[in-house]
Length: 599
Image 1 (cartoon, rainbow, N blue to C red):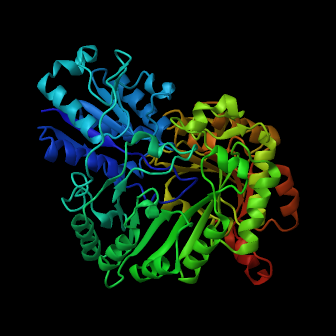
Image 2 (image 1 turned 90 degrees about the horizontal axis):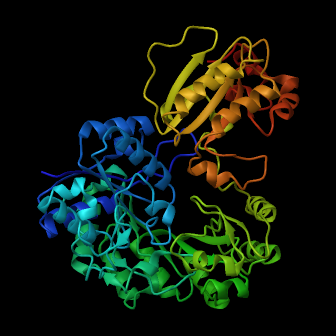
Image 3 (image 1 turned 60 degrees about the vertical axis):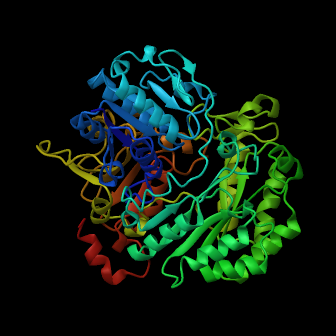
């Protein structure tokens, strides 16, 4: 019997942190449709969260190898496609007979670096359920096609790398009913993430130039009301706290008012809350009132830009009066509003972007403004017209804009900083604050190796997880960069896509690392294959995160008068952190505690 493993990797944490929200909904859709709708006799295993959300790269390769699949499928998104392809490459090096199929938003006909990657055999373009099922049907009918993919006949929706050919477009599913039972059938358990992800509509009537989503669908497809209610009843019975509505624009549907009443009817005791994305224009007090009765906790709305030129180029005109009325109706009903702005859109200038900041602030139109740097996504109009519009962007995810005809990369990075200052928050904070920084916390949230450079190498070390800490101790750090680099290489050579924090514990050190030591350690971290966060933060201005690797100089003793001098010495390449009990002023009575050393 054909054996298939399906893998959806999470957004990597920015540091030691428990991964949440990585629900393999697409994998469950694929499994249910193939086995229960198409009737394919095949063994399909969805890799569970205890592996996907925790394991490092090497551990995932080992686990998948031990399962011995014939075919591995990866759901590829902006944040996981490079890691998925790295895993596929390693698996095929170990098992040349293994076949790999990929799907998801990263798989578009214009994203050639993905389609031509040597680790893949097939790629599902667009809606995937029926295409994937047809591929499995073909491989079970003719197993020899696993070893001879050039002989596989064309399948609508499928790219075959062996023949460099696409099987043509595939018609959209008529409804979402065939895939909308994955929770009801037990393929997913909402208690795993305390959330039920519910897609009641597929497709979008809007054609925003920065978004790929609507381009792959012919029209709108819906889930029947009875099935919506059955899923909501399951959420109620499971005792979860949230139903997250995946509909791309909740109020695009003509029956929006009656649908809100359906959601309220499905949550009579308000045991869980709803979250959704919608357009503020068109929301009236009546809608907001029903949403509050249904127990909507928050919504995300997309303003994106206040520039009329930018709005025209992205096909997203804003009626300001209607926008403001809609937001106020939501706020007055007690529903939290997160408003989005994008920096780097064609047509925007530095001044129009600042006007966007002032617009949200002066009118109080958001509880939590979200500011994003433009991603020039594959499959979008902005990608297709990038040269015409003067867009320069990264060749790898997240495809951040590096410059426009009106903005330089320096201006874009500066505007991101201004946004953080204007709204009084950091958009990508470290998951462990300096105030709670300790070995105990880091061990709870990821894997942890404590290495003393003056002692023999440990004989046993735990598996590396997706977030890993190297806690390094030594009597002398000056001139020891080579020893620290050895341990960084131990981690990153086999786990290039994990998040790594290197902590140099100077609590009992007699000499400190020199600037050359710091730079040498950082080169060991970054002179190699880049990960998602490395690319994400590449356009940042220092000081600030430089990628998925963080270097910290830590002291378990009070630094007293040396604090400012040391911070200047190590910044911006490394962060200086004292033990939490040593940080706050006015803790003189605790001086003895923190002067006694590290934990």
